[in-house]
Length: 309
Figure: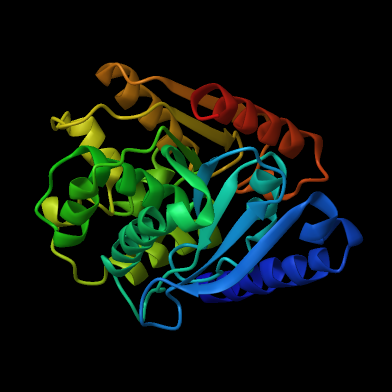
């Protein structure tokens, strides 16, 4: 059942993405945006990214580094072109990445790729016209996990070589926006503790953990798969964590991860705007024709403007 749900989800997102591209308003040039496509940040076929350039600018642009979701197993930057275009229309240079997917590439491949793409971006910002002092990270679902882990790597001196390289680069995001994020991949059974989930939903969550983590040893080796657990442990950081905007729908099975994130950040004194959208399902913000999705985007862009622009 979970495999069937995954197949249907993949087909739905690819179908919606392809159909959406046919609409005249989906053309970047209609919005004053130019896109550089399929730039390589690594040797693998999945290690590619797109850069969205707003044509109108008077100097270096604020930047959004975006990471797609898909349970670490499906989707890509190409299914998430809408997010790149939305931020670029608002005046942000957008780096929208793909990364290696499970189960072919298990943890920590995805976060390794996010860190590698981050370093690529920092090196290329002078050419791209981005301002390295005004960079935000954003992503939804699995991508929300990855940008939260990336933010930890930028703020905490860690042992993983890929995380240490991010820390040594010395650039901390000015803001982080984990949309409807799965912030602890381990212990998927926890999602059903407060309210019983439909079997197929719990199956997807179980399969996500098994597919991404495989036989990765429990404990601190999984820290960057479980960034929420790191924040809740109270581990010290070497640089202040940035403000976070964490939107989620109240019908999202991942709702409690955002609630826990809000509590953990408040306990640390980190500014956190957790927003709960009544009736919103998982990744509801992608359905931009719906009022709740549009409200979420307005809130997210206003948050970025306050903290980054």
